[in-house]
Length: 267
Ligand SMILES: NC(=O)c1ccc[n+]([C@@H]2O[C@H](COP(=O)([O-])OP(=O)(O)OC[C@H]3O[C@@H](n4cnc5c(N)ncnc54)[C@H](OP(=O)(O)O)[C@@H]3O)[C@@H](O)[C@H]2O)c1
Image (cartoon, rainbow, N blue to C red; front, side):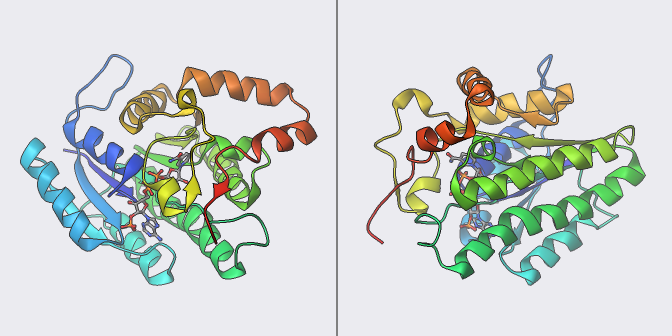
């Protein structure tokens, strides 16, 4: 049985990856295969343990708990160590942990901005490197780096960090061509998770049609990985929007996109 390691596995998109990979099931295009054993990573140990027990009882898979704060060197090192364990190899890494800061540029403290870069960029770089080293030796494996459609529009430091994820993943995927290792940047649009509540962002100016379901998103993302895509925007609505974005002047784009979903509660 293969093993997947998911960061930010306890909520939202990461929890949807855990459910989908534990359940397994093969589709013509999806290629998820049988249920995966899992290594679940996040900061909340109790929640991780409950989730591991639930997935084990439901699907008969082994679910390991790894408590780690990816905003710290110790947390990143603990996950690097697990990814480098040759006795218990990881076949699929999902770099999903992430968050939004409350406020616009200059409203957010430099410490919080740097924490975002640590979790969204440094952890993704280090964990991808740790995982891919063994995958390349074994001649197979996959990495999904969760970015955002915010990577393609001028959308504060959050969008900038997610743009790094897309560029990094595309470049690394190219360098690893022919090794049997697949890398893909996943770019979701607005998805119903704990993300906006945690960041204290209001969501009432986001139209209903823009919301995605995390489980459907993950099924489509894994199908894109199986097809060998290096960037996945796994929804027809956002595919159409991103095509329009490519044709829109950057200046106009900034005005149109910077307000949607960036209504912050009291500081
Ligand atoms: N929801 C959206 O609309 C949306 C759209 C595009 C992209 N995304 C991206 O999707 C990814 C998942 O977000 P989500 O919407 O599923 O958010 P979520 O529901 O808030 O879940 C975030 C997960 O990340 C973990 N996490 C946060 N900070 C961490 C840290 N320092 N170390 C380790 N784990 C940490 C959380 O668990 P603990 O608190 O226990 O650590 C939780 O499991 C993020 O990268 C986000 O940027 C989200």
